[in-house]
Length: 530
Image (cartoon, rainbow, N blue to C red; front, side, top):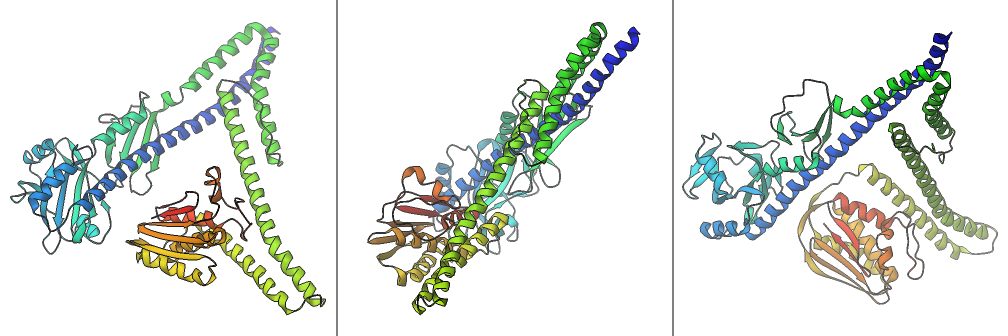
């Protein structure tokens, strides 16, 4: 009898323990994978930022080197611009034709020594610069793409002695090309800094699966099964791989397993009473999770588990509650969006319907038709804006061509000049930029049209290189609302309410960001940077 009672008391506890262990294991695995993904994303972002910083600095240097200068002056200028040598192992200035030639080049001293001490098949000594130089032909992507106005970054690194280097290039003035070998040693420091003291392995891997950088020495595996998570780096063919030993990643499960075993042994001595208490403690959170999941399934998105614990089940409940909150917020945003759209579409439809009804009943004459036309135009404009929002959020493709920004702005302003009731002035000159002319013109028209609606007596449009500034003498936007006006359906009351759904500025900022630029409000001035 005693054994039967112990068995009856222990079996429910064992079942709940196994169920809890299974649920917790799934939660821990998802959490580990999520942590790996976040770690990989952070590492990828820092690597991408490091490369973008190097490219941006090389572009700045390219703007300061003139093709007609004496090579010695160019070399002296490069030496000054690269002091301190924090990013580049080598920078070369190329004149490109049938036979590309290095006209000026600077190298870090240790990097130069490493080249002189090795037999490199892709380099040769150049007496003009007194250093080893690359032997690239005119069809080499690093020269060819820069000649055509594009930046270039190699897909894998080159190893010179102990120096890992990534070749990049940018166009320079006069059809020349500026190339550089980016020092990749700091990338390993970046990976070490992100991983910290935790025994995870972070690897930067190229498209062929070769390891470019790692947060530790040579990785030979642990001899046990690893959990590996790979995340691509946006804008490159590389990815970050995070590896962690299963026994370390799932260490919390080991503690849970021991607790369950001790609990079962203790239940043998405390009999069924203690087993009931333990069972209730184990089952109650699971039941709460099940009730909450059922409530969510029936549409009650405000349901929460109400579990406040510090153990793994508490972590699972917190993750579940965060998921429910995210679903509730998404549902709220959807409802708000539908309400906004319904309200904005109802107004012109109702106005047009009433005007046509009055016309049919003879209460008004043909003079009502222009008003109906205005309502229909407003309705069509709002529908087009909603379609633009949908296209942009789905990933709008850009038809970029080389365009004179100043000429594009003047053309856009000229389309609005007949409707302007205040002075409208355009001045300045723009650069030749690769952009989608129709979409950028849409931004300029929207900004100038808004300025004309609020201006008291004057609207000024100024073009500065890659920047367009639209200024009016109206009331301006208060500082606390300068970000909110770029949200969908958001408008700030600074004067008479203009027609529109509040989508124009949101669409304009999204198009600017698709071009890699920005759109900001500075009170009475909107600034577009491309």
